[in-house]
Structures are given as structure tokens and as C-alpha cells.
Amino acid sequence: MQNHSVKIYSIALLALLSLASCVQVKEYQKSRINDSEMTLSNRHVEKNELNAESYREGSSGANGGKTGGGCGCN
Amino acid sequence: MKKLSLSVIGMYLMMAQAFSQDPSGDSTGYKPKKLKLDEVNLVSSYYDQTADKSAVMGGRTDYKGNGDVTDFANGLDVTFIGWDKKKRKNTLTFGLGADYHTAASQAYVDSNGTSRNYGTRIYPTLNWTRENEQKGTSFDLGAYYSAEHNYYHSIGLNAAVSKKNKRNGEFSLKLVGYFDQIKMIYPSEFIPVDSAKNTSSADSIVYITTASGNVQALKYNNGQLVGGNSKPELPSKSRNTLTASFSFSQIINQRMQGSVELDMVYMSGYLGLPFHRVFYNTGKDTIENLPSQRFKLPIGFRLNYFLGDNIILRSYYRFYADSWGLVSNTFNLEVPVKITPFFSISPFYRFYMQTAARYFAPYMVHTIQEQYFTSNYALADFRSNLFGAGIRLAPPRGILTNGLRILELRYGHYMQTTDLNSNIISLNLVFK
Image 1 (tube, rainbow over the protein chains, first blue to last red):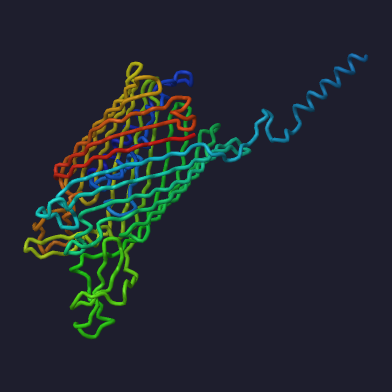
Image 2 (cartoon, rainbow over the protein chains, first blue to last red; image 1 turned 90 degrees about the horizontal axis):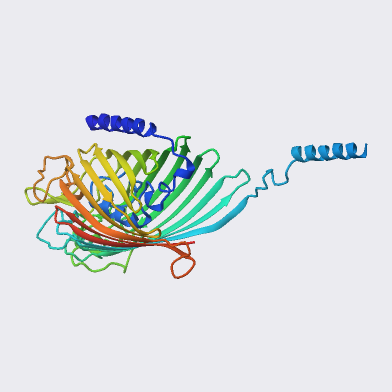
């Protein structure tokens, strides 16, 4: 677990630095970025699908879904 | 002279106007708006699962179909939006969910397979968000409640803050706590005889707990009901889940944006379930026993790319590790194709693989010397594939009526290497 933790924190830091060094995009250039299909989150319609996955699989989290609570969530 | 006087008066009036206090508190004519109904969001799903290995039966495979499940889930969110005097946007969302499920394994909480095999779950939610668009900050508070047959309650509380920077990036921090109270529903062969109320084994009482949480008192020797349907309070144990979630999203260029999300999850309390059996290699059965603490560390990445004019690539990857030795990788790719600006078709594929938790072993493999043990296949080594497609319809003038603005329909087929297969179909309707 400790080895994995170090890896995960390193990857997170690297990803943050990579993302933070991006080009400036002005408001009028965001027509594609603002498209409803481009949202950086799950769709509402996926809600119960994610719930079922959290019951049938051993891992959860980092996807905007629930991380605990209720029965069956490991 | 007259002209000069008029000019001086005019200038004075202009200055007076410039420095005067606007009754609304704003020189731009801004007026706060009370909370108004903005959106009603309905999500309905039907889930159908076939499986032969259930945790209730300790992973036995000779009871075909004892892992079968159906679930009809419905969730309704009603959102109100308003702006206060300081131009902050306030969003209030009330949610109510209701699920009805059948589970073949639930019947076998009673070893004869006679427990009730269906149940319901009700879960209201409340969420409030205050967003300052000028400063690029937001603050969020929420509460969640859920009740089901096998736990008295699950209470969830969350708080979140986020801040946008000038380079199209946004950082957010979310803290979540779930506080559960689990009913100690044991398999019928482990229900203790109530010796406190009974002086001899001939008239001792057994409390039979159905999977729906109803408790019946039966005479131990002949199984007759005692005093009709008595409902003694079942003992319970607590389970707490605390999560700190950090996320950063960034617009990378005019066609691409990405995000990284790191969750730190700490669980404590009773982390198994009292009606999950485990069979030792001797053939004797017991109840699963798991450590009282678990630390989970998932990290997820999203990258969305607008390819050409009609195709979007939505990708997601997650790496997960926890203190029970379970490691998993999740890959997800969805490709929405815009047939028109308001209609898209989205095929998707998800691949998932996990290693087993160190406390997992199949049916009749655990030894009596082990301290922790489970035969719940959610903690086994397996791979799974999920594929399907969705459609999204969002014409600006509504669908059939002006009120229905968005319709999404999605179907997915899921296959796990433990022989668990499922289908799910979901519908999302958004009314404005």
C-alpha cells in the first residue's frame, strides 16, 4: 500500500504540473470546449450504472460517484 | 451667465448622480433574483443480473442463479436557482430516490431459502451551492439519507470549495462523511436462542430475521409463532466512511480539456456484512470477518477531445489501491458522434481488472486458523467488460413539449470473469 501511495501521489503531482502549463484559451474560442458532450464528469444517465459497479467491484472513488454509505459498498 | 449657471448645475447633478447610492446597491441596475424553479431531472434505470456465486451463500456454486438480482431505480432532482445582492448564484437541489430490488441470495439468509427476496430503498438528498462568478469561487454543502432493510440508516454530509484561476483551470476540495448503522441480520443458523427470556430449551425462543428486516419470534422446538408478529429491535453496528477529494481541471486548448481527481478514503467500524457466509475447508460455515479499518486511494484522469466537427473522445482512466491489498485499473472510452448539433449517439466501452483482497478465498478454501476471511466475489481477482451505447436529444425548443429539454437513453451489457453478467437500461429526462 505504501509503495502504491508514493506512486499515486507522484502521478497526481506530475498530472497537475502538466495540466497547469497549458495554453491560454479565450472565451470566444470555447465553443467546442463548452459543448455539452465535453463535460469532465459522468452523465446523469450513468448514475445507477456507477452504483451497480460499486456493488459488484471491490474498488470505488475518483469518478465523482459515491465512495461509501449504505449496504454492499465495499 | 445663464449658460454658465446651467452648465455648473448640470455638472453638479452629474457628479451627484455619480456618487449617489443606488437603492438596489448597484450602479448597473442589477437586482437580486429570488430562488426560482430551474430544472427537474429524472433518472430511471432497470438492472438485471445473473450470477451463481453470492456472498450470502459463501461463494457456493451448486445453487444456480442464487446471485441473480433485479433493480428498478428512480431518482428525481428538483433544482432552484437565484442570485443574491452580492451577485452570487445560489443553487438549491432537492433529490429523492426510490429503488425496488429482488435478490435471489436474500432468500438464503434463512438457510431454508424462505426469507423475503425483495426490498426497497428510499434516499432523499439536499444540496446548496453558492457561486461567485466574478471571483470564480464556489461553496457547496449537502446532506444525504438512506434507509434499507439491512441497515437502519446511512447519513451522508459533504462540504466542498472550488476556485477557478485565470488560466482556465479549476481546483476543488470536497470532504464527505457517511455514517451508517448496520442491522445485525445473521444467517438463520447463527441466530442465538434468547436464553434470557426462557428457562429451558423446550420453550426457548428463536428470532428469525427475514431479509427484509422483519423479525419473528418462533418457538425453538416446533417453529410456532409466539405472540403474533413481534418486532424486537435488532442490534446494530456502525460503519463510518470519511473522504477527502481533491480535483483539478484544465482547458488544454480549444479542443481538449482534462482533469485529475484524487480521493483519500478512510473506512472504520463493521466493514463486513453479518449475513455473508464463509465455508471453511472443513465444510463448517461461519460469518465473514474483515478488518475494522480500510484505507482506499483511487486516482482518476479524464481527457476529452473534440475531433473534427462531429466526434468527441471522452476517455477516463483510474488506478486504485487499498490497505486490503486490492489493486485495480479502469479504462473507459466513450465516443459521442453528433448527428445534428442537438442529437448524438455515444457508443462506449469500459475495461476493469482487479486483484483479490488478501482476505478473499473461494468456497471451502479458508482455514479455521485465519483471522480475517470472506468469500464475497466483489473482493476476488477478476476482469470485467462493459459495452453499450447511449443517445442524447436536446433540441433548443424542447422535445414534443416545450418543457422537456433533454432526453438521454443508455444501455450497457456487463460481463465479469466470475460468471456474473448484467444488463442495465437507463433513461434521463430533464424538464426546464
